[in-house]
Image 1 (cartoon, one colour):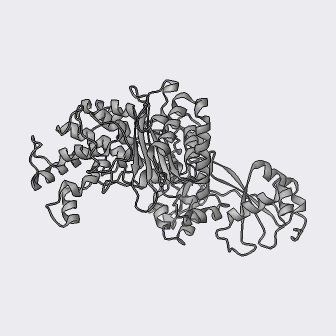
Image 2: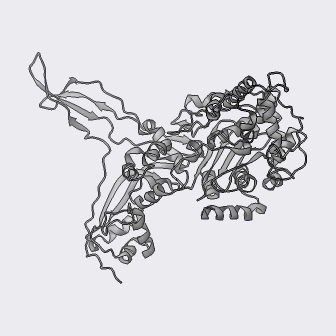
Image 3: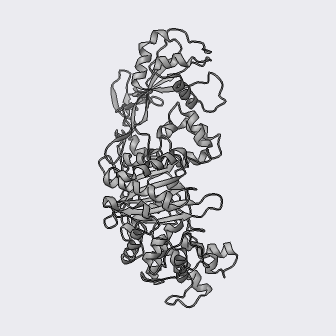
Length: 606
Protein backbone atom coordinates (compact mmCIF):
# COMPACT_ATOMS: atom_id res chain seq x y z
CA UNK A 1 0.00 0.00 0.00
CA UNK A 2 1.42 3.37 -1.10
CA UNK A 3 0.05 5.35 1.83
CA UNK A 4 1.61 5.92 5.25
CA UNK A 5 -0.47 5.23 8.32
CA UNK A 6 -1.38 7.87 10.86
CA UNK A 7 0.05 7.52 14.37
CA UNK A 8 -1.75 6.07 17.35
CA UNK A 9 -3.84 7.90 19.94
CA UNK A 10 -6.69 10.45 19.52
CA UNK A 11 -7.24 14.04 20.37
CA UNK A 12 -11.00 14.00 20.73
CA UNK A 13 -12.83 17.30 21.04
CA UNK A 14 -16.50 18.09 21.51
CA UNK A 15 -17.49 21.56 20.37
CA UNK A 16 -21.08 22.80 20.71
CA UNK A 17 -21.46 26.09 18.88
CA UNK A 18 -23.63 28.62 20.70
CA UNK A 19 -26.06 30.52 18.47
CA UNK A 20 -26.48 33.46 20.81
CA UNK A 21 -24.58 35.90 22.99
CA UNK A 22 -23.79 35.27 26.65
CA UNK A 23 -26.98 34.99 28.72
CA UNK A 24 -25.81 37.79 31.00
CA UNK A 25 -23.54 40.43 29.56
CA UNK A 26 -22.55 43.96 30.51
CA UNK A 27 -23.70 46.55 27.96
CA UNK A 28 -22.28 50.06 27.62
CA UNK A 29 -20.86 52.38 30.26
CA UNK A 30 -22.15 52.28 33.89
CA UNK A 31 -24.81 54.81 34.87
CA UNK A 32 -25.11 56.85 38.08
CA UNK A 33 -28.34 57.42 40.05
CA UNK A 34 -28.73 61.26 40.27
CA UNK A 35 -30.38 61.11 43.75
CA UNK A 36 -28.25 58.52 45.58
CA UNK A 37 -25.07 58.80 43.52
CA UNK A 38 -24.83 55.02 43.35
CA UNK A 39 -23.35 53.55 40.20
CA UNK A 40 -25.29 50.83 38.37
CA UNK A 41 -24.18 48.47 35.64
CA UNK A 42 -26.32 48.00 32.54
CA UNK A 43 -26.90 44.33 31.81
CA UNK A 44 -28.70 42.40 29.12
CA UNK A 45 -30.05 38.98 30.10
CA UNK A 46 -31.27 36.40 27.59
CA UNK A 47 -34.68 35.13 28.67
CA UNK A 48 -34.31 31.82 26.80
CA UNK A 49 -30.96 30.91 25.34
CA UNK A 50 -32.13 27.59 23.87
CA UNK A 51 -34.06 29.04 20.94
CA UNK A 52 -34.65 26.37 18.30
CA UNK A 53 -35.37 27.29 14.69
CA UNK A 54 -38.70 25.96 13.49
CA UNK A 55 -38.93 22.75 11.50
CA UNK A 56 -40.08 22.31 7.92
CA UNK A 57 -42.64 19.53 7.38
CA UNK A 58 -44.48 18.26 4.31
CA UNK A 59 -48.26 18.17 3.88
CA UNK A 60 -48.41 14.80 5.69
CA UNK A 61 -46.32 16.06 8.65
CA UNK A 62 -43.11 14.29 7.69
CA UNK A 63 -40.17 16.35 9.01
CA UNK A 64 -38.02 17.51 6.09
CA UNK A 65 -35.68 20.02 7.74
CA UNK A 66 -34.76 20.24 11.41
CA UNK A 67 -32.00 21.56 13.67
CA UNK A 68 -30.07 18.60 15.00
CA UNK A 69 -26.66 17.65 16.34
CA UNK A 70 -24.19 17.03 13.54
CA UNK A 71 -20.88 15.18 13.89
CA UNK A 72 -17.90 16.42 11.89
CA UNK A 73 -14.56 14.66 11.53
CA UNK A 74 -11.71 16.98 10.58
CA UNK A 75 -8.90 15.21 8.76
CA UNK A 76 -5.28 16.17 9.44
CA UNK A 77 -3.61 18.47 6.92
CA UNK A 78 -0.63 16.18 6.78
CA UNK A 79 -0.51 14.04 3.62
CA UNK A 80 -0.70 11.43 2.22
CA UNK A 81 -3.82 9.81 3.70
CA UNK A 82 -4.24 6.13 4.48
CA UNK A 83 -7.73 5.72 3.04
CA UNK A 84 -7.84 2.02 3.90
CA UNK A 85 -7.12 2.65 7.59
CA UNK A 86 -9.62 5.52 7.72
CA UNK A 87 -12.22 3.32 6.07
CA UNK A 88 -11.68 0.57 8.65
CA UNK A 89 -12.18 3.10 11.42
CA UNK A 90 -15.42 4.50 9.96
CA UNK A 91 -16.79 1.27 8.49
CA UNK A 92 -16.37 2.55 4.91
CA UNK A 93 -14.62 0.93 1.98
CA UNK A 94 -11.64 2.66 0.40
CA UNK A 95 -13.63 3.91 -2.59
CA UNK A 96 -16.19 5.55 -0.31
CA UNK A 97 -13.43 7.33 1.60
CA UNK A 98 -11.89 8.65 -1.62
CA UNK A 99 -15.27 9.74 -2.95
CA UNK A 100 -16.24 11.55 0.25
CA UNK A 101 -12.91 13.38 0.36
CA UNK A 102 -13.22 14.35 -3.33
CA UNK A 103 -16.73 15.71 -2.69
CA UNK A 104 -15.37 17.85 0.14
CA UNK A 105 -12.60 19.54 -1.88
CA UNK A 106 -13.70 22.89 -3.36
CA UNK A 107 -11.69 22.36 -6.56
CA UNK A 108 -9.93 19.43 -8.17
CA UNK A 109 -6.46 20.96 -7.97
CA UNK A 110 -6.71 21.51 -4.20
CA UNK A 111 -3.32 20.74 -2.63
CA UNK A 112 -2.70 17.56 -0.69
CA UNK A 113 -3.67 17.97 2.92
CA UNK A 114 -6.30 20.62 2.14
CA UNK A 115 -8.54 20.98 5.27
CA UNK A 116 -11.42 18.52 5.00
CA UNK A 117 -14.36 17.88 7.31
CA UNK A 118 -16.55 14.82 6.84
CA UNK A 119 -20.06 14.45 8.19
CA UNK A 120 -20.54 11.33 10.29
CA UNK A 121 -23.58 9.52 11.56
CA UNK A 122 -23.99 9.01 15.30
CA UNK A 123 -22.87 5.41 14.84
CA UNK A 124 -19.74 6.41 12.94
CA UNK A 125 -18.92 9.02 15.58
CA UNK A 126 -19.29 6.32 18.22
CA UNK A 127 -16.71 4.18 16.42
CA UNK A 128 -14.26 7.09 16.47
CA UNK A 129 -14.83 7.62 20.20
CA UNK A 130 -14.36 3.93 20.86
CA UNK A 131 -10.91 3.92 19.26
CA UNK A 132 -9.97 7.36 20.58
CA UNK A 133 -6.72 6.15 22.11
CA UNK A 134 -5.39 4.92 18.77
CA UNK A 135 -5.87 8.01 16.58
CA UNK A 136 -4.06 11.19 17.67
CA UNK A 137 -4.58 13.31 14.55
CA UNK A 138 -8.36 13.26 14.14
CA UNK A 139 -10.58 16.02 15.45
CA UNK A 140 -14.23 15.19 16.11
CA UNK A 141 -16.58 18.10 16.71
CA UNK A 142 -20.30 18.46 17.32
CA UNK A 143 -22.57 21.32 16.39
CA UNK A 144 -26.22 22.04 15.90
CA UNK A 145 -27.04 22.59 12.24
CA UNK A 146 -29.94 22.37 9.82
CA UNK A 147 -30.31 18.74 8.76
CA UNK A 148 -32.29 17.54 5.74
CA UNK A 149 -34.09 14.24 6.21
CA UNK A 150 -34.92 13.94 2.50
CA UNK A 151 -32.88 13.93 -0.70
CA UNK A 152 -35.71 15.61 -2.66
CA UNK A 153 -37.00 19.16 -3.08
CA UNK A 154 -33.77 21.18 -3.00
CA UNK A 155 -35.12 24.36 -4.70
CA UNK A 156 -38.27 24.20 -2.56
CA UNK A 157 -36.56 23.73 0.80
CA UNK A 158 -33.62 26.03 0.05
CA UNK A 159 -31.15 26.88 2.79
CA UNK A 160 -30.48 29.08 5.80
CA UNK A 161 -28.30 31.97 4.68
CA UNK A 162 -26.13 31.91 7.81
CA UNK A 163 -25.11 28.32 6.99
CA UNK A 164 -24.46 28.99 3.29
CA UNK A 165 -21.42 31.25 3.65
CA UNK A 166 -19.04 28.66 2.17
CA UNK A 167 -21.36 28.38 -0.84
CA UNK A 168 -21.44 32.17 -1.22
CA UNK A 169 -17.64 32.31 -1.21
CA UNK A 170 -17.45 29.56 -3.82
CA UNK A 171 -20.09 31.25 -5.95
CA UNK A 172 -17.92 34.36 -6.28
CA UNK A 173 -15.55 32.31 -8.44
CA UNK A 174 -18.23 31.83 -11.09
CA UNK A 175 -20.08 34.31 -13.27
CA UNK A 176 -23.51 33.04 -12.15
CA UNK A 177 -22.64 33.03 -8.46
CA UNK A 178 -24.60 36.13 -7.44
CA UNK A 179 -27.58 34.95 -9.50
CA UNK A 180 -27.77 31.68 -7.55
CA UNK A 181 -27.21 33.37 -4.19
CA UNK A 182 -30.22 35.61 -4.70
CA UNK A 183 -32.58 33.05 -6.18
CA UNK A 184 -32.18 29.59 -4.70
CA UNK A 185 -32.95 30.11 -1.00
CA UNK A 186 -36.36 28.35 -1.03
CA UNK A 187 -38.74 28.50 1.93
CA UNK A 188 -35.81 28.51 4.38
CA UNK A 189 -34.88 31.97 3.08
CA UNK A 190 -38.38 33.27 2.30
CA UNK A 191 -39.75 32.46 5.77
CA UNK A 192 -36.45 32.97 7.62
CA UNK A 193 -37.83 35.45 10.18
CA UNK A 194 -40.73 33.19 11.15
CA UNK A 195 -38.53 30.10 11.37
CA UNK A 196 -35.95 31.90 13.50
CA UNK A 197 -38.33 33.30 16.07
CA UNK A 198 -37.10 36.07 18.34
CA UNK A 199 -34.82 36.23 21.37
CA UNK A 200 -36.20 37.59 24.61
CA UNK A 201 -34.05 40.07 26.59
CA UNK A 202 -34.25 41.70 30.03
CA UNK A 203 -32.35 44.95 30.65
CA UNK A 204 -31.77 45.36 34.40
CA UNK A 205 -29.65 48.00 36.18
CA UNK A 206 -27.50 46.14 38.73
CA UNK A 207 -25.52 47.51 41.67
CA UNK A 208 -22.18 46.21 42.94
CA UNK A 209 -23.94 43.56 45.06
CA UNK A 210 -25.95 42.26 42.11
CA UNK A 211 -29.24 43.79 43.25
CA UNK A 212 -31.51 45.08 40.47
CA UNK A 213 -32.66 48.71 40.39
CA UNK A 214 -35.13 49.08 37.55
CA UNK A 215 -34.35 48.75 33.85
CA UNK A 216 -32.37 50.79 31.34
CA UNK A 217 -34.24 49.65 28.21
CA UNK A 218 -37.55 48.04 27.25
CA UNK A 219 -37.63 44.28 27.74
CA UNK A 220 -38.46 42.08 24.74
CA UNK A 221 -40.51 38.90 24.68
CA UNK A 222 -39.04 35.55 23.66
CA UNK A 223 -40.74 33.92 20.67
CA UNK A 224 -40.08 30.34 19.58
CA UNK A 225 -39.36 29.75 15.89
CA UNK A 226 -42.48 28.52 14.10
CA UNK A 227 -42.82 25.30 12.14
CA UNK A 228 -43.67 25.47 8.45
CA UNK A 229 -46.12 22.89 7.13
CA UNK A 230 -45.60 22.72 3.38
CA UNK A 231 -48.09 21.94 0.66
CA UNK A 232 -45.51 19.54 -0.81
CA UNK A 233 -46.08 15.78 -0.73
CA UNK A 234 -42.47 14.64 -0.26
CA UNK A 235 -43.16 11.14 -1.63
CA UNK A 236 -44.70 12.60 -4.78
CA UNK A 237 -41.80 15.06 -5.00
CA UNK A 238 -39.24 12.26 -4.79
CA UNK A 239 -41.14 10.21 -7.37
CA UNK A 240 -41.36 13.11 -9.82
CA UNK A 241 -37.63 13.81 -9.38
CA UNK A 242 -36.89 10.21 -10.41
CA UNK A 243 -38.82 10.80 -13.63
CA UNK A 244 -36.80 13.91 -14.53
CA UNK A 245 -33.45 13.16 -12.87
CA UNK A 246 -30.53 14.60 -14.82
CA UNK A 247 -32.60 15.87 -17.74
CA UNK A 248 -33.17 19.61 -18.13
CA UNK A 249 -36.68 20.79 -17.39
CA UNK A 250 -39.38 21.05 -14.77
CA UNK A 251 -42.54 19.42 -13.47
CA UNK A 252 -45.05 21.30 -11.32
CA UNK A 253 -48.19 19.77 -9.83
CA UNK A 254 -50.90 21.81 -8.08
CA UNK A 255 -54.13 21.09 -6.26
CA UNK A 256 -56.35 23.34 -8.43
CA UNK A 257 -58.91 23.61 -5.63
CA UNK A 258 -56.50 25.38 -3.28
CA UNK A 259 -53.43 26.51 -5.25
CA UNK A 260 -51.26 24.26 -3.08
CA UNK A 261 -48.11 23.06 -4.85
CA UNK A 262 -47.96 19.27 -4.51
CA UNK A 263 -44.52 18.97 -6.08
CA UNK A 264 -42.15 21.29 -7.87
CA UNK A 265 -39.22 19.67 -9.67
CA UNK A 266 -36.36 21.57 -11.23
CA UNK A 267 -34.03 19.30 -13.18
CA UNK A 268 -31.23 18.35 -13.14
CA UNK A 269 -31.95 17.54 -9.50
CA UNK A 270 -29.52 17.66 -6.59
CA UNK A 271 -29.54 16.90 -2.86
CA UNK A 272 -30.82 19.82 -0.73
CA UNK A 273 -28.02 19.33 1.83
CA UNK A 274 -25.41 20.07 -0.83
CA UNK A 275 -25.47 23.86 -0.46
CA UNK A 276 -24.74 23.99 3.28
CA UNK A 277 -22.97 20.68 4.03
CA UNK A 278 -19.31 21.25 4.99
CA UNK A 279 -18.16 18.21 3.02
CA UNK A 280 -19.89 19.02 -0.28
CA UNK A 281 -17.67 21.82 -1.63
CA UNK A 282 -16.58 19.67 -4.58
CA UNK A 283 -20.17 18.85 -5.49
CA UNK A 284 -21.11 22.53 -5.23
CA UNK A 285 -18.27 23.46 -7.57
CA UNK A 286 -19.58 21.07 -10.23
CA UNK A 287 -23.11 22.43 -9.85
CA UNK A 288 -21.86 26.00 -10.23
CA UNK A 289 -19.82 25.15 -13.33
CA UNK A 290 -22.41 22.96 -15.05
CA UNK A 291 -23.74 24.29 -18.36
CA UNK A 292 -27.09 22.67 -17.50
CA UNK A 293 -27.48 25.19 -14.63
CA UNK A 294 -28.92 22.75 -12.06
CA UNK A 295 -28.97 25.46 -9.37
CA UNK A 296 -31.48 27.48 -11.38
CA UNK A 297 -34.99 27.05 -9.99
CA UNK A 298 -36.53 26.45 -13.40
CA UNK A 299 -40.27 26.44 -12.51
CA UNK A 300 -40.01 29.89 -10.93
CA UNK A 301 -37.18 31.56 -12.81
CA UNK A 302 -37.02 30.20 -16.34
CA UNK A 303 -39.58 31.57 -18.81
CA UNK A 304 -39.89 29.78 -22.18
CA UNK A 305 -42.21 29.77 -25.18
CA UNK A 306 -44.99 27.33 -24.14
CA UNK A 307 -45.70 25.92 -27.58
CA UNK A 308 -49.04 24.36 -28.44
CA UNK A 309 -50.26 24.19 -24.86
CA UNK A 310 -50.91 27.94 -25.25
CA UNK A 311 -53.57 27.16 -27.85
CA UNK A 312 -55.85 26.65 -24.85
CA UNK A 313 -55.49 30.31 -23.83
CA UNK A 314 -55.89 31.56 -27.40
CA UNK A 315 -59.02 29.44 -27.86
CA UNK A 316 -60.54 30.73 -24.61
CA UNK A 317 -59.92 34.36 -25.60
CA UNK A 318 -61.24 33.77 -29.14
CA UNK A 319 -64.42 32.24 -27.71
CA UNK A 320 -64.85 35.15 -25.32
CA UNK A 321 -64.61 37.85 -28.02
CA UNK A 322 -66.65 35.87 -30.55
CA UNK A 323 -63.83 35.20 -33.00
CA UNK A 324 -64.82 31.51 -33.05
CA UNK A 325 -67.47 29.24 -31.57
CA UNK A 326 -67.12 25.65 -30.36
CA UNK A 327 -68.44 24.45 -33.73
CA UNK A 328 -66.14 26.57 -35.91
CA UNK A 329 -64.35 24.50 -38.58
CA UNK A 330 -61.12 25.38 -40.38
CA UNK A 331 -59.31 23.57 -43.17
CA UNK A 332 -55.85 22.20 -42.33
CA UNK A 333 -54.19 24.58 -44.81
CA UNK A 334 -50.48 23.73 -44.81
CA UNK A 335 -49.70 26.89 -46.80
CA UNK A 336 -50.47 28.95 -43.70
CA UNK A 337 -48.33 27.03 -41.24
CA UNK A 338 -47.09 23.45 -41.22
CA UNK A 339 -48.84 20.75 -39.23
CA UNK A 340 -46.40 18.21 -37.84
CA UNK A 341 -48.62 15.18 -38.37
CA UNK A 342 -51.46 14.01 -40.60
CA UNK A 343 -54.92 13.97 -39.10
CA UNK A 344 -58.61 14.16 -40.12
CA UNK A 345 -60.22 17.51 -40.80
CA UNK A 346 -60.75 19.64 -37.69
CA UNK A 347 -64.43 20.52 -38.02
CA UNK A 348 -64.77 21.86 -34.47
CA UNK A 349 -62.71 23.30 -31.63
CA UNK A 350 -62.73 19.89 -29.94
CA UNK A 351 -61.08 18.29 -32.98
CA UNK A 352 -58.71 21.21 -33.39
CA UNK A 353 -57.43 20.56 -29.85
CA UNK A 354 -57.48 16.78 -30.23
CA UNK A 355 -55.20 16.91 -33.28
CA UNK A 356 -53.38 20.11 -32.18
CA UNK A 357 -53.90 21.40 -35.72
CA UNK A 358 -51.58 24.37 -36.29
CA UNK A 359 -53.55 25.80 -39.26
CA UNK A 360 -56.74 25.64 -37.16
CA UNK A 361 -55.26 27.88 -34.47
CA UNK A 362 -53.50 30.09 -37.04
CA UNK A 363 -56.95 30.91 -38.42
CA UNK A 364 -58.44 31.20 -34.93
CA UNK A 365 -55.88 33.85 -33.99
CA UNK A 366 -56.23 35.55 -37.37
CA UNK A 367 -59.93 35.96 -36.73
CA UNK A 368 -59.08 37.42 -33.35
CA UNK A 369 -56.38 39.89 -34.48
CA UNK A 370 -57.31 40.86 -38.05
CA UNK A 371 -60.84 42.07 -37.50
CA UNK A 372 -62.76 45.16 -36.51
CA UNK A 373 -64.90 44.85 -33.40
CA UNK A 374 -68.16 43.07 -34.28
CA UNK A 375 -66.82 42.24 -37.74
CA UNK A 376 -64.68 39.55 -39.32
CA UNK A 377 -64.28 41.35 -42.64
CA UNK A 378 -62.15 44.48 -42.19
CA UNK A 379 -58.42 44.39 -41.39
CA UNK A 380 -56.84 47.74 -40.50
CA UNK A 381 -53.77 48.93 -38.57
CA UNK A 382 -56.00 50.30 -35.83
CA UNK A 383 -57.97 47.06 -35.59
CA UNK A 384 -54.81 44.96 -35.28
CA UNK A 385 -53.45 47.17 -32.49
CA UNK A 386 -56.74 47.22 -30.65
CA UNK A 387 -57.33 43.49 -30.93
CA UNK A 388 -53.80 42.52 -29.90
CA UNK A 389 -54.15 44.74 -26.82
CA UNK A 390 -57.51 43.08 -26.09
CA UNK A 391 -56.00 39.60 -26.51
CA UNK A 392 -53.18 40.52 -24.12
CA UNK A 393 -55.62 41.92 -21.55
CA UNK A 394 -57.57 38.65 -21.48
CA UNK A 395 -54.42 36.51 -21.44
CA UNK A 396 -52.90 38.52 -18.58
CA UNK A 397 -55.93 37.69 -16.43
CA UNK A 398 -54.51 34.13 -16.31
CA UNK A 399 -51.68 35.53 -14.16
CA UNK A 400 -49.34 35.79 -17.16
CA UNK A 401 -46.86 38.57 -17.89
CA UNK A 402 -46.64 39.18 -14.13
CA UNK A 403 -45.49 37.35 -11.03
CA UNK A 404 -48.02 35.08 -9.35
CA UNK A 405 -46.57 35.96 -5.93
CA UNK A 406 -45.52 32.43 -4.97
CA UNK A 407 -43.62 32.17 -1.67
CA UNK A 408 -40.16 31.79 -3.21
CA UNK A 409 -37.30 34.32 -3.04
CA UNK A 410 -37.48 35.14 -6.75
CA UNK A 411 -40.01 34.63 -9.54
CA UNK A 412 -39.86 35.63 -13.22
CA UNK A 413 -42.91 37.39 -14.73
CA UNK A 414 -42.81 35.85 -18.20
CA UNK A 415 -43.82 37.98 -21.19
CA UNK A 416 -46.75 38.74 -23.50
CA UNK A 417 -46.02 41.17 -26.37
CA UNK A 418 -47.84 44.51 -26.66
CA UNK A 419 -48.70 46.48 -29.82
CA UNK A 420 -45.98 48.96 -28.84
CA UNK A 421 -43.47 46.11 -28.61
CA UNK A 422 -44.18 45.11 -32.22
CA UNK A 423 -44.15 48.74 -33.39
CA UNK A 424 -40.60 48.99 -32.07
CA UNK A 425 -39.46 45.48 -33.07
CA UNK A 426 -40.85 45.77 -36.63
CA UNK A 427 -39.90 49.46 -36.92
CA UNK A 428 -43.35 50.21 -38.25
CA UNK A 429 -46.91 50.42 -36.97
CA UNK A 430 -48.12 48.70 -40.13
CA UNK A 431 -47.10 45.19 -39.13
CA UNK A 432 -49.52 42.49 -40.23
CA UNK A 433 -50.88 39.36 -38.61
CA UNK A 434 -48.62 37.29 -40.84
CA UNK A 435 -45.58 38.78 -39.06
CA UNK A 436 -46.84 37.76 -35.59
CA UNK A 437 -48.75 34.55 -36.35
CA UNK A 438 -46.33 32.50 -34.20
CA UNK A 439 -48.40 33.70 -31.21
CA UNK A 440 -51.19 31.41 -32.41
CA UNK A 441 -49.12 28.30 -31.65
CA UNK A 442 -47.45 29.57 -28.46
CA UNK A 443 -44.15 30.49 -30.09
CA UNK A 444 -42.38 33.72 -30.86
CA UNK A 445 -42.33 36.33 -28.12
CA UNK A 446 -44.60 34.55 -25.59
CA UNK A 447 -42.73 33.34 -22.50
CA UNK A 448 -44.24 31.50 -19.52
CA UNK A 449 -42.71 30.02 -16.36
CA UNK A 450 -43.48 26.54 -15.09
CA UNK A 451 -45.57 27.96 -12.26
CA UNK A 452 -47.64 29.93 -14.78
CA UNK A 453 -48.07 26.84 -16.97
CA UNK A 454 -49.32 24.77 -14.04
CA UNK A 455 -51.56 27.60 -12.88
CA UNK A 456 -52.96 27.94 -16.41
CA UNK A 457 -53.94 24.27 -16.22
CA UNK A 458 -55.52 24.81 -12.80
CA UNK A 459 -57.55 27.76 -14.13
CA UNK A 460 -59.04 25.63 -16.90
CA UNK A 461 -59.71 22.83 -14.39
CA UNK A 462 -61.61 25.37 -12.24
CA UNK A 463 -63.42 26.86 -15.24
CA UNK A 464 -61.90 30.30 -14.79
CA UNK A 465 -60.55 30.97 -11.29
CA UNK A 466 -57.50 30.18 -9.17
CA UNK A 467 -55.82 30.64 -5.82
CA UNK A 468 -52.20 31.84 -6.15
CA UNK A 469 -49.79 28.86 -6.10
CA UNK A 470 -47.99 28.52 -2.78
CA UNK A 471 -45.65 26.19 -0.87
CA UNK A 472 -46.70 26.72 2.77
CA UNK A 473 -50.17 25.64 3.91
CA UNK A 474 -49.73 26.63 7.58
CA UNK A 475 -47.30 28.62 9.72
CA UNK A 476 -47.29 27.21 13.23
CA UNK A 477 -50.96 26.84 14.09
CA UNK A 478 -52.05 29.49 11.59
CA UNK A 479 -52.95 29.02 7.95
CA UNK A 480 -51.02 30.27 4.91
CA UNK A 481 -50.28 33.92 4.23
CA UNK A 482 -53.50 35.83 3.64
CA UNK A 483 -52.87 36.52 -0.05
CA UNK A 484 -52.97 32.80 -0.79
CA UNK A 485 -56.60 32.56 0.35
CA UNK A 486 -57.84 35.21 -2.11
CA UNK A 487 -59.62 33.78 -5.14
CA UNK A 488 -58.68 35.33 -8.49
CA UNK A 489 -60.95 35.30 -11.53
CA UNK A 490 -60.00 35.54 -15.19
CA UNK A 491 -61.88 37.74 -17.66
CA UNK A 492 -63.12 34.66 -19.51
CA UNK A 493 -66.64 33.33 -18.85
CA UNK A 494 -66.77 29.84 -17.36
CA UNK A 495 -68.82 28.54 -20.29
CA UNK A 496 -65.85 29.09 -22.59
CA UNK A 497 -63.55 27.09 -20.33
CA UNK A 498 -66.14 24.32 -20.33
CA UNK A 499 -65.93 24.33 -24.13
CA UNK A 500 -62.22 23.44 -23.93
CA UNK A 501 -62.68 20.32 -21.81
CA UNK A 502 -64.02 17.93 -24.50
CA UNK A 503 -61.03 18.70 -26.70
CA UNK A 504 -58.56 18.20 -23.83
CA UNK A 505 -60.18 14.87 -22.98
CA UNK A 506 -60.05 13.90 -26.66
CA UNK A 507 -56.29 14.58 -26.66
CA UNK A 508 -55.91 11.58 -24.34
CA UNK A 509 -58.25 9.33 -26.31
CA UNK A 510 -57.73 7.21 -29.40
CA UNK A 511 -56.39 9.37 -32.24
CA UNK A 512 -55.47 12.25 -29.92
CA UNK A 513 -51.91 13.53 -29.70
CA UNK A 514 -51.37 11.91 -26.26
CA UNK A 515 -53.57 8.81 -26.50
CA UNK A 516 -50.66 6.59 -25.40
CA UNK A 517 -50.65 8.35 -22.01
CA UNK A 518 -54.31 7.68 -21.21
CA UNK A 519 -55.22 6.47 -17.72
CA UNK A 520 -58.62 5.17 -18.78
CA UNK A 521 -57.58 1.62 -17.86
CA UNK A 522 -57.55 2.60 -14.16
CA UNK A 523 -60.74 4.66 -14.40
CA UNK A 524 -59.09 8.10 -14.50
CA UNK A 525 -60.13 10.53 -17.24
CA UNK A 526 -57.31 12.96 -17.96
CA UNK A 527 -57.78 16.30 -19.70
CA UNK A 528 -54.54 17.45 -21.34
CA UNK A 529 -52.76 19.32 -24.08
CA UNK A 530 -49.39 18.51 -25.64
CA UNK A 531 -46.84 20.97 -26.95
CA UNK A 532 -43.70 20.71 -29.05
CA UNK A 533 -41.66 23.91 -28.88
CA UNK A 534 -39.49 24.67 -31.90
CA UNK A 535 -35.85 25.24 -31.02
CA UNK A 536 -33.40 26.71 -33.52
CA UNK A 537 -30.38 25.72 -31.40
CA UNK A 538 -31.02 22.00 -31.02
CA UNK A 539 -33.74 19.42 -30.52
CA UNK A 540 -37.24 20.72 -29.85
CA UNK A 541 -38.57 21.08 -26.31
CA UNK A 542 -41.45 18.90 -25.05
CA UNK A 543 -44.37 20.34 -23.07
CA UNK A 544 -47.62 19.14 -21.55
CA UNK A 545 -50.33 20.56 -19.30
CA UNK A 546 -53.32 18.71 -17.93
CA UNK A 547 -55.47 17.79 -14.95
CA UNK A 548 -57.36 14.82 -13.53
CA UNK A 549 -59.98 13.64 -13.01
CA UNK A 550 -61.38 15.75 -15.83
CA UNK A 551 -64.78 16.34 -14.21
CA UNK A 552 -63.57 16.69 -10.62
CA UNK A 553 -59.96 17.90 -10.85
CA UNK A 554 -57.69 17.16 -7.88
CA UNK A 555 -54.30 17.61 -9.53
CA UNK A 556 -53.08 19.89 -12.33
CA UNK A 557 -49.66 19.27 -13.87
CA UNK A 558 -47.25 21.09 -16.17
CA UNK A 559 -44.16 19.41 -17.64
CA UNK A 560 -41.41 20.96 -19.76
CA UNK A 561 -38.40 18.95 -20.96
CA UNK A 562 -35.67 20.78 -22.85
CA UNK A 563 -34.43 19.18 -26.08
CA UNK A 564 -36.67 16.15 -25.51
CA UNK A 565 -38.63 16.24 -28.76
CA UNK A 566 -42.38 15.73 -28.91
CA UNK A 567 -44.59 16.65 -25.96
CA UNK A 568 -46.73 13.58 -26.61
CA UNK A 569 -43.87 11.10 -26.23
CA UNK A 570 -41.65 12.84 -23.66
CA UNK A 571 -43.65 15.21 -21.43
CA UNK A 572 -47.13 13.64 -21.35
CA UNK A 573 -46.00 10.27 -19.92
CA UNK A 574 -44.23 12.00 -17.00
CA UNK A 575 -47.32 14.06 -16.24
CA UNK A 576 -49.78 11.18 -16.25
CA UNK A 577 -47.49 8.97 -14.14
CA UNK A 578 -47.42 11.70 -11.50
CA UNK A 579 -51.21 12.00 -11.71
CA UNK A 580 -51.64 8.26 -11.30
CA UNK A 581 -49.16 8.12 -8.42
CA UNK A 582 -50.98 10.92 -6.59
CA UNK A 583 -54.54 9.74 -7.23
CA UNK A 584 -54.00 5.97 -6.81
CA UNK A 585 -50.79 5.71 -4.79
CA UNK A 586 -49.25 3.26 -7.26
CA UNK A 587 -48.63 2.67 -10.97
CA UNK A 588 -50.62 0.05 -12.86
CA UNK A 589 -48.57 -3.01 -13.97
CA UNK A 590 -49.06 -2.22 -17.66
CA UNK A 591 -47.10 1.04 -17.21
CA UNK A 592 -44.28 -0.35 -15.02
CA UNK A 593 -41.98 -1.02 -17.98
CA UNK A 594 -42.80 2.44 -19.32
CA UNK A 595 -42.01 3.96 -15.89
CA UNK A 596 -38.65 2.19 -15.65
CA UNK A 597 -37.66 3.29 -19.13
CA UNK A 598 -38.38 6.93 -18.25
CA UNK A 599 -36.41 6.63 -15.01
CA UNK A 600 -33.42 5.12 -16.85
CA UNK A 601 -33.44 7.99 -19.32
CA UNK A 602 -33.70 10.45 -16.43
CA UNK A 603 -30.68 8.91 -14.75
CA UNK A 604 -28.61 9.17 -17.90
CA UNK A 605 -29.80 12.71 -18.62
CA UNK A 606 -31.18 11.95 -22.09
